[in-house]
Length: 275
Image (tube, rainbow, N blue to C red):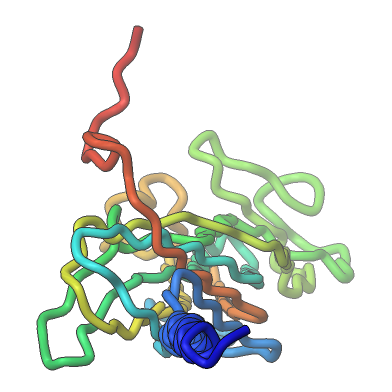
C-alpha cells in the first residue's frame, strides 16, 4: 500500500469511528420507568361508639416521577400499576328499638401529568383521573337488645316481651336487657392497572408525574325523630351507638412511560356504541 492509499484509508477509518461515536453519544430515549417497593400512602378515618351523627374524612396525596425526552408530534403511552388495600368496618350497638347506620368509604385514585422541563405547560393524560379501587360499605340495624334475666311481677301482658303492630318491641319492666351488637368487616388487597396516553407531544424533555391519592370517610347516622328515613323504625325509648372505620392504602406501584407513534386517527375520544 503506497503512502497516498494509506492516508485515504486512515482518514476513512477516522470518519467511520467518529460517526459511530456520535450515534452512541446521543441515544434516543423511548422508555422510562419508576416504582416504589414500600407502602406509599394511607388514609384512615375512625369514629367509635358515636351516639349522635358524625362524619370524619382523611385524604393523602403524593406522586412518583419519571423523565423522558420526546421528539415532535409523538405520543406517550403511560401504564400505571398499584397494589391497593381497602379496609371498611361498621358496627351498631343498641337496645329497645335503637336504630342507626355505619357508613365506611375507602378509595384510591391516580392522575398522570406531563410537565415540560423548559418551563412549558402541564398536560393531563387521557382519559383523566382514574379510580383504581373504591368501596362504600353501609350497615343498618334496629336492635331490641339481649334479655339477660327476668323476674315474675305484674305486667300488662303475658310473657317476657311483645311486639306492637307497628313493630315496637316492649319488654316487661322486671327484665334486664343489655345492648345487642352486630358488625361487618371487609379487608381486600388487589393489584390494579390502567393505560393512559398523552397525544401529540411537542418536542422536549418532560417530567411524567403520577399523582396518587387515597381517601377514607367514616360516617355515623343515628335514627331519631328528625330523620326522614326512620319512619316507624324510630323508638324514643331505644338507645344506640355506632362505630365506623375506613382505611385506604397504596402499597407497591409501577409507572412505565413509552414513546410511541400512533396511527393516523388512532388516538380519539369516543363513546361506547351499542349494536
